[in-house]
Image 1 (spheres, helix red, strand yellow):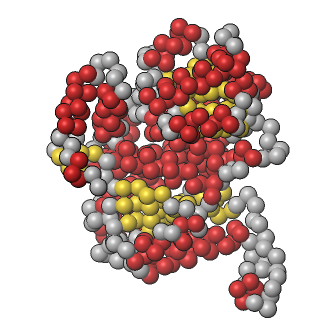
Image 2 (cartoon, rainbow, N blue to C red):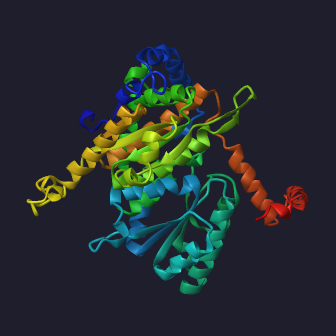
Image 3 (cartoon, rainbow, N blue to C red):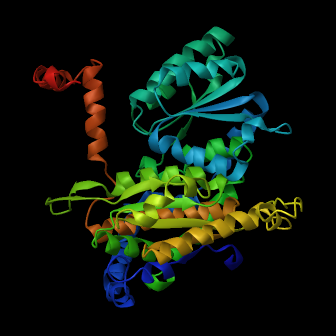
Length: 463
């Protein structure tokens, strides 16, 4: 669908000047690196290594049937997950159902809540707005042992049992986890919960187009087949060996080359409220995939560009001052929408006052895109590199396309950095420490190490 193709504009990376941007010679001189990176990703895929790349072609009939039943039986649908088991669900819902979805007067599908934190007020507070007897819970953890998710499951399990009794409470839960192993899979076997698999070889931050993200989307009325069709179209684009025809390769190459010149921060800045949470999802994808201590040879490299979330036009009034006049360490990645679902025409009024007169006859759509262009002009004039992903419109097809493009861009960047973009040892270290602190069996040694470290804590430096 060429009319729905997302375009990547990197002109203003080249216009930023050789010191802080890129020259055409620098960009074209790295073509071989980009080709090799694309080839390496496709070779790994062909070997069966990168299973997330096959998600656009999955059969979603089971998910659709389950979603239809949940829509019929429940008023609210709650996702219990964290990180890659939550951020994609939020991003898809905000983008396709809108920021006011839960408040719609005419809504005919369940409200969606995503509890992705173990904060007690956040979890307990949900009970002020939902009736457990009319609520379904989707418990999502690939390992089946994520502490934040299992704690939420235990809490809401008890509340549902209290609300509906000991016989029918299991019907309120869907467990999405590893298809073969782990504590949640064991519960599915023991107690007969409905369940969906997190496909083998699909890491959490690459799982939005799997049952992890698709069930909540389908329950809330999203056309998940169009979401996957958009991802499949992006797959066609990102298979291109020629990097200049491959937007994921160009996006990765630009950012890695700029990183080598000291541009260590990427600011994702959508100019669309619906895409605000895509920036949040991208932050995990980029940070967890590319922030690595060692490269593939085991050499210490401490590599990783830092993602920052911003929202246009909101953050023109909170962050852009830093981006135009602060350190030369940032690339801004705008997301621009050409056609909004509504225009929001502005009436003529107070025409004798210049502050009002120029706005009349325009629309919110014109205003926000003028603001994006104005910010781009300011950055260019300040010598700051930026690029723009241009979406024809926001729909299931373009969103699926965008998510897949960014996933492949991340994988290619990992190849260019020569690191493993699919592990997260730093995250695992924090999990292990948490298990030890809470007394989980098997972690006694780590608990003792933490206790010894606490003894070295100098209260003199607690102010």
